[in-house]
Each structure stands twice: as C-alpha cells, then as structure tokens.
Length: 337
Image 1 (cartoon, rainbow, N blue to C red):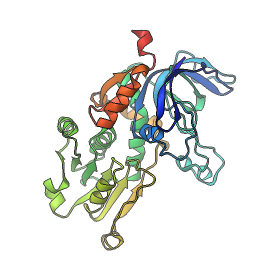
Image 2 (image 1 turned 45 degrees about the horizontal axis):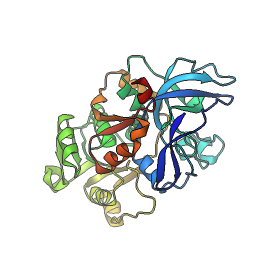
Image 3 (image 1 turned 60 degrees about the vertical axis):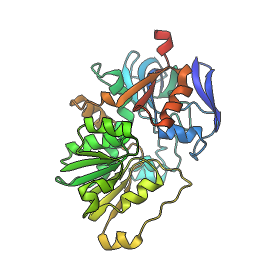
Image 4 (image 1 turned 135 degrees about the vertical axis):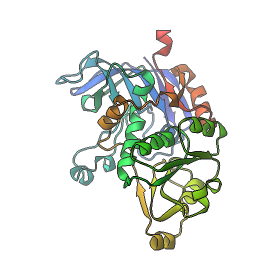
C-alpha cells in the first residue's frame, strides 16, 4: 500500500510499505480521511521528543474497518469509525489516577507508531468509536481535533456571561469558539494575523475578529475573563497573558515548540489571582465530541481542502503558508477517482 513516511526530520515522501495485519485486539482501518495539524508539523521538523523515525504520521483519522484481529467483537468489519490516537499504558502513576493523557509511557497512533497518512492502518480496537452514517466525511475527520477542544473546554471554569478572547483563527481556535458559545459566553473574540482566516472567522459568528487585541474595547480596558491561546506562538502567549482580567483564566491550548520559553509577570499572576491552565490532547472527550456533532453542531465549513497522498507536499506547503482552513488527506482518493 501507499503511505507517507517520515524517514528522518525534514525527509518525508509517499512510499510503498507493507499492508498492515491486525494483531490480537486490533483492527485494520481503510482510511477515508486524516487531518493535517500542527503536531504533524512538529513531527516533520523533529520537534516532538517521543517520536522515533521512520514513522507514518497522521493522528486525526477516520475510515472503515476492513479486517479484525483475534478477540475483537466491536467494531466489526464494515463499521465506520473515528480513531482516538492516544494509547495510555494504564500502569503508570498518571494512568492509575485517571489522567491517562499525561501517561509517562506516551504512545500514540501517528506519533510513536504508524498513523493515518496511509491507505490502511492497524489500530487497537479499543481506540475505535463507531460513528453515525449521517456524518459527512468532513465531520468525521474533525472528531479528533474536536475532542481536544472538548477537553480544553472541560479544563475551563465555564461560568456563563464571561468574555472570551481566543488567539488563533485556525481550526482549533474556531472549534473552541463554537464550544464556548454553547457554554454561555457573553462574547467571543479572536485575534489572528492572517487576514484570510479573520474574514472566515467573521462569518463563523464571532463577536470580533481582529489582528490585535488593542482593537477590542475589552482589550484596552479591564481585559477578558478567559483568554485561550490556540497558536502555540510565544508572542501570542505573552500578549494573551497580559489580557486576562483579575480573577480570570488563561488556557494554554496551542502546541508550542518545546524549546521555546515565554516571559510573564509572576506579580501579575499573584496580584490578579490569574489561573494558568494547560490542556493536553484528549481525555475522556472522544465520545462527547461525537455527541456534540450528532446534536447538530455544523463544523463542515472548517474543512477547506482535501488532498491525496501524492499531493502531501502541496498540503504541507499550504498548511505552512496559512492559506485555507482545515486540510484533510484522503489516502484512497486517487483509487476512488
């Protein structure tokens, strides 16, 4: 079969690899869609410590079960599934206290083992969630990132009537914006330097979409009860920390370069009683994300581009340029014509 293989940081290309076979407790999924995200960029650049190369990346995957291994009863062949890529060990301290997303023996599909930028992939059956036939291909491919946003939302205090400021008008920032709306936010504003993304964000129902928080009334005044960084960019993080209202919350939701440092005022955190919270990946939020989509939340417009495996370089270039919105890779697209 064909798959995208990262042989070492900076060296990536589609290649022929052996077809996967399911081990006991595993299934083989024919991948219909797999999203490209910032974590994949870190893997391509060698910036994510758990990764060993070569690796087939891709962790936002959905598709159809085509083969099951010994002992598997659910899902069944023919089921349409979304795959939770996270595989906590279940034995370390954090797993044993119910914090599996902080597992000390971190493993994940598309990070430490073969992922979804391939025609097929073998995954643990326990990671598969059967999804409704009514879900569009776009919605199905958004379940994994939405589950991250659901976990991020669960980390927040969620007090109705608060004002939110989100840095980043990409997929994750807009997903978070849609969710906090449902949690009773009084207003939701977004900051981004990309004019194309800001134009789309305005059509997405935000109260304001601007290039600087200085352009917002609350940005010049007392600040926002909740500030969310969905960029991982140090300048955005540093600016956002200074926009939190007294008694407010700052959520670090974006994935930053592990080598970068951000400066902040400890006195401001102390004197204003600011809560600084992190949100790491998925945590008991996959099924809730599916349920949110099933309830009618329409995120399909977030997907702007779908590429086949052979156009992976084009997809990466488009992602890095910040053009478009969510980019999906459809590994079997060429075969399906």
